[in-house]
Length: 200
Image (tube, rainbow, N blue to C red; front, side):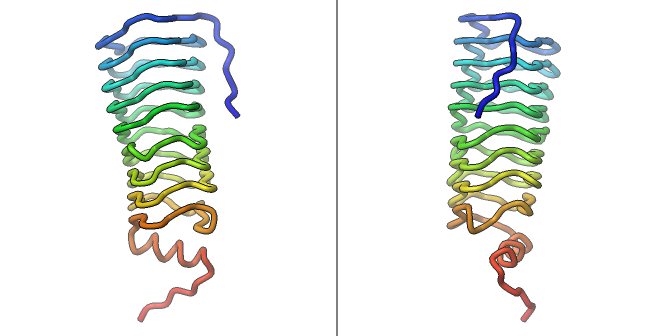
């Protein structure tokens, strides 16, 4: 369930195409039906904001902070987020095709049933995130901290999970057919299935 923060300001229908957002600071603002295609920048801050129907296509955002924000029906096609902080943010009915996330802290995010099949996440902290029911078949979740995250009924078919912390993953409640894991991860998952792994 998405919990909407109270907003005090509304910015609607504006065209921010290719705008440099470096250093901007926004709080408790509703951004609705806006075009942020090819936006760039470093170090902008958005706190308790709501993004509804916003297009982040091909945006390249570095060290942004989106804390306790809500993204509703947004599009992140071919966007790149580097070392961004999204702690406590929530996503609903968003599109993540060709999204690339490198590093950053996404702990406590709500990505319930998110369509991450075409996304690539590397080295992202996702501690205690709600990843239940995510559709990440063929996706990339490499070197991610998934500790204490909820992966119940996650579709990880053919996903690349190498180097990620899978300590909270129950292989009986997720689809792992064809998923790519390291040897150490395979042993962990086998033990979670009740197998006793012994060297030859």
